[in-house]
Each structure stands twice: as structure tokens, then as C-alpha cells.
Image 1: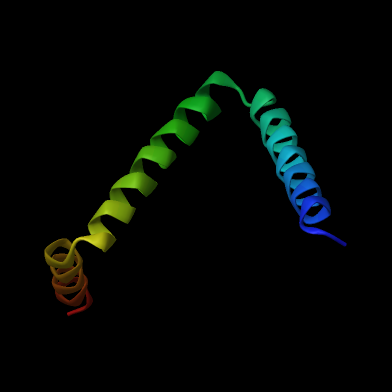
Image 2 (image 1 turned 90 degrees about the vertical axis):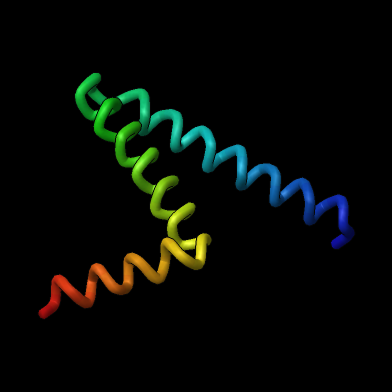
Length: 68
């Protein structure tokens, strides 16, 4: 098996994943699409916060205060 075969298998699996995701999204109602969009934006915000040292520390402190 060569590098070309490996790349073809990888791209086929990525294409299959993209088709499956598109089919799942096509079955969403408008309300579900809005909710999914909001969840996506929240996940992006969470990632930004986790990558920033000061923000991550603030989250840890807030979580500790909530536990008390």
C-alpha cells in the first residue's frame, strides 16, 4: 500500500463523514438549527477561554466558589 492509496482512503472516509453530517443537518427543524448554531458559538467561546491562561484561571476560581 502506497502513500497514494492511504490518502485516497482517508479522503473517502472524510467525504463519507461530510455526507453523513449534511444528511443529519438536513433533517433539523428551524428551531433545532438555531439551537445548534447557538451551541456552536458557545463551544467556540469555551475553546477561546480554555486557551487563554487568565480566562482559564478565572473559570477555575469561579468553579471553586460555586462548590463552596
